[in-house]
Image (cartoon, rainbow, N blue to C red; front, side):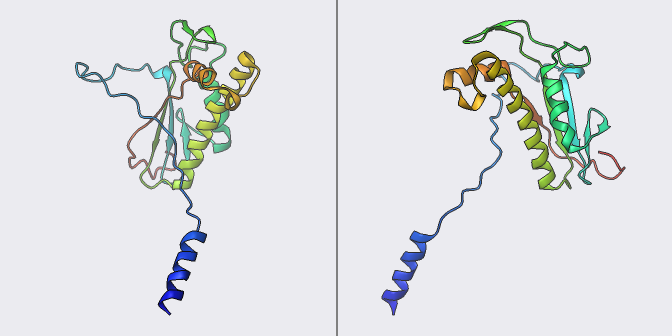
Length: 182
């Protein structure tokens, strides 16, 4: 009887698949040098504020927004193709390997949610923001190299990442709730 139980145990251990949960892939910024007390201020035009309240309502740049419009609004902010003065500035032109001289955006996406925000809504917002960056990188990659970003080798994809860096700042959750808006 013990042998049969042992064989069944081995069978279930071998036959069972282990699902690995995947999280949100983000690389933390490097720590500030010890001689710097606080980070330098960021101009308001360079910050794209995204708030989610406890009612799972989305407020972007002070206006209620449907989640379906977040990706396009984010792409417009990051790219700022017409150098609009209400959208982020660009850094001085820099030479990026394999791309050449390019002006990188100073834009930062600031994401903050309420402690009562549903995890599903938080993930939807994360997905929309990430999709905006992915689509911008795909478009730029097609323009420069004739391939999608995901099809590039390591050196070319690194160049695209330098030209279109993913800068998402997440603040600690607060109690934004109530008020009918975030």
